[in-house]
Length: 226
Image (cartoon, rainbow, N blue to C red; front, side):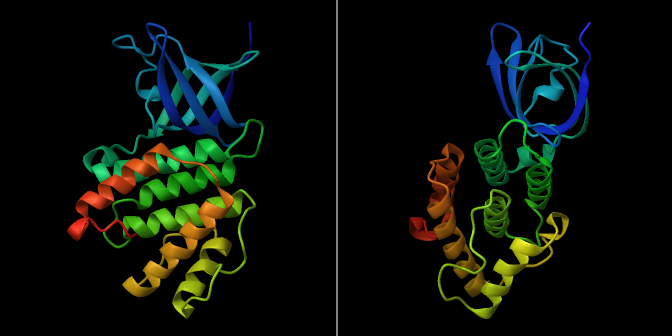
């Protein structure tokens, strides 16, 4: 009988597979990004149903196969259910998962990226931190983890914006969301992080397109500027 292993991670993607199964993409601390099949997860009453939801975070018990893993159990400690109550926050969260899926690879150390996704999802919806700031902090630190960033902003900015940039690239992940910015420096920070993301990540994210559409609808006069 094959031995199972336990990995700490989060479900980045959950898609139907066959009649009753689900195909999961997990970001794990120990193995980086892995694909796992949850057999029977779509059957009513399946013990794997809850563990196969996107955003589910916990310890997953898996068997390794030739091309994918098989999920046979999980202890979920966080579902981030509060995101389902806020459409915008859910879109931001989905974007974070999509970026993590794009940047992560199998058999890499996924601990820093996993921690970043976790603390960023926790930061969404906190009244003291605008979600648009959470997005840019997430993006910049994801670039740092991926090794694609500059030590200073790509253009001249205010002292407050420059400090925010330095703080995000150097602070421990668990302390990333302990600052905020006034509107002027925040707009600067958004602009320079966006420029860096476009420079280093040449990829279109579907969840970001949806998020931008929501922003456009909610902005006065349909202004799409972040």
